[in-house]
Length: 224
Image 1 (tube, one colour):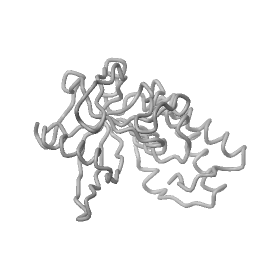
Image 2: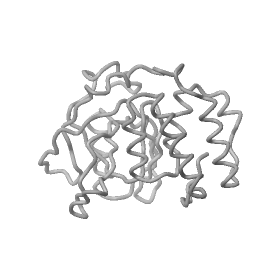
Image 3: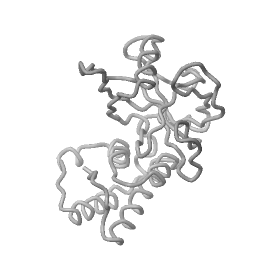
Image 4: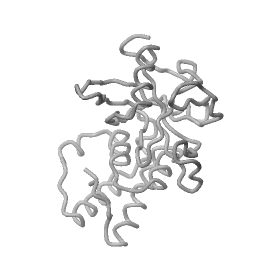
């Protein structure tokens, strides 16, 4: 696998992925998710991913409505595969890395494996539009999105990089705001499963307005 891989369709990706269940973590196509890896099973997962050359990790959330065993929680059916595009060793046994999202997937089957981390058979077929960068940007109501962001920042006494926001294309803006949003597992999963960019933007605005009506978010993680 070349260092700068290009994925044009589902045939370019394996149908078996190592999965990293992490509540509250949202990865979207072409989005960038920083991770701090320290658990032995996930260090093993990263080592194997690098050794095999595919450098792919399936990000997925545990399903809190059906928790299952503590060491092996039940998972939502939809996740997003990311490629390790940056990695640094910390010197104390951790990896600090960045995943770049490629395409969403549907979990079809969890496999019985000898690895300490979980592996699943997946399909990308429901999400082939994810391979098309900036698809549906022209349908996004950017004005409504920025108004909701402005209201959220004001209510929470936060600041942001407006120059960066104003210069960002609609896809990058919507997905970055969704990924960095301080909302809960259910809201993050809904944003992930939104059928298209327009729907995701509308959902993000609606969730933000609901939080504002309740008096703001209780999270310590700002939308920025």
